[in-house]
Image 1 (cartoon, rainbow, N blue to C red):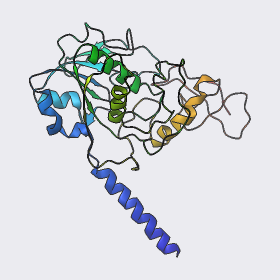
Image 2 (image 1 turned 180 degrees about the horizontal axis):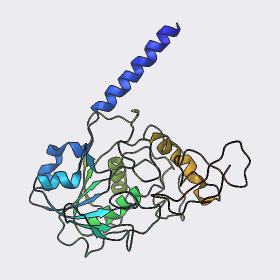
Image 3 (image 1 turned 120 degrees about the vertical axis):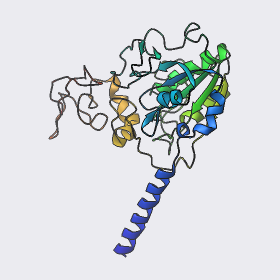
Length: 298
């Protein structure tokens, strides 16, 4: 009986691995969206997760002679290394010379001037499926600005690593903020493309945009999906990503959730608690000033 159980578990593991390997994210389906970009001036909304296997989306499109004139970046910046909440300045992509406009600096919504001469906004950012993860808030403002300026929006969809369930209370009216823009549960269960359709469909923006979502291939919500690239500095692996919707609730308290350690969003503690387990937050990339810096937490 034990041997049968082992075979069954091995079969399920193999099936999961095969399913994972067959997923094709929308960015990889170049033929599906390249015709929509031809003869247009393109601005990419992206960051370090905007990858086509080992090639960045910007580099891929430039090699295909797509007229990419600008990049908009979300919280944590184009390279995804800045601290949570840190303001990001505009810059230039060293490799291509394309200007990078921060949507987490002077403004979170693209301005009329920043949108000049743009025909299509191409959005490709990996989300993690939590209401307070700010990439969906950036999506909101990008879509709203596009609708107001009659610019097309194309979303390149990606899996939601927390997309197999929905959980938590719905945000109440009157508590809107950049970490909670819409009346949805804490864990919403949608991919970034599905979420974009909901933003448009529920009229959460001042004017609906001309939206097109390029879908993935071979993806279902019950699949386990390990992100190939960390979506932000303090979500280094699947364990952090899966625990993030719960442990992030401690961010508003004086309890550390492990920023400044090797295991952010995988443990919690404070100097005044008692335990046999302890950690000491240190300054580092993506966490220059962690809570209880250099103080042992239990």
